[in-house]
Image (cartoon, rainbow, N blue to C red; front, side, top):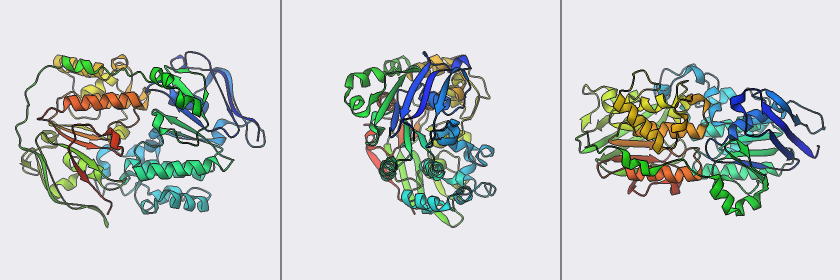
Length: 483
């Protein structure tokens, strides 16, 4: 194996809007494991796309050597796992946001086993399934997996091809605490094998595992000088300058004072809720009451039914009609439309992010929150447009208001979808892993926005796998377990 594995030399993408501030230069040597780190929108994923040959170069070159010191196309030796890959799984592009909850409509969707059976090294697949503890997932259809389960599946499938370089974009988001520990242990083991080198793309310093040897900081589409991992972790000054959030919490004071629009005693009352898909029981005899103004954390491991439960509350799951559910003091199935329910709710989830594949401006995505649609099909009035722009200013994303949602980074998309949650001043906030993919400073500030927004009249349901992400206003919790 050569001393230099990959060398990017004076690379400039052919399309000008993809260009970094300077030509890209980066060398990865044998036995090095890298973390590429930077704030949301820094250009980290774009750098990986350039490295893996997604975009043609105007000038410069990318040299990639295999174990026999022969030049290779990067795609032959590199496997890149990113959040967006979930959408590109077999048949997923033909499905839609609510289809996960519509039993009977997913017969043509592949199972985990269907896709893994296509991999050539089935012995390796069996070892990886056991290592990740996902034996219970193999018979499940892809669109019925939770966000964390999908991420585990993607990693297993990528490792099955025995790549020489494995790149994982934000590997730990969406994974429960136990799964994060397992993944870190697997990465540690893989890093010692000798024929695999790992590059992790992260937005949070705490996501850098011990096996990382080198760090490449990225900010404003500029590569900062690479460092040994120990030197980066000890450089607090660099951390501070690297992560400077554009979120402006002070702008919350510019929001107009509004009286509570909804008169209700209970945001929800669920009695003996049971949800089954075939023989698989997701929720059984669950009872839960959330009163006006209460702040709840909804907790549990991957696959415990958190997202399914939220889909009932948000009127996305048709099994809501077969269960005893009261929302905003009105029993489900008594003549209300789903829009009557949704107008009181601000909702974000990994599934919504996954399926929000609309080539519209970020301004229109935020504005769609007024109408609870995936895409903007009705024009905002002047007051709504003013409110939309103000929330984009609060979240520090006004500079991308005219940019297509599909061309901004995953972290920026998450900030756009968060702004979408707040525009209509909802009575109930349902925030399912809202800080997914955000850098450390943005996490801190979004958490403060949530705490400031949730006045005594606002009800909140908050889902996370990270205890430190739970807002201070939370004072109650519901813990789900896997059936």
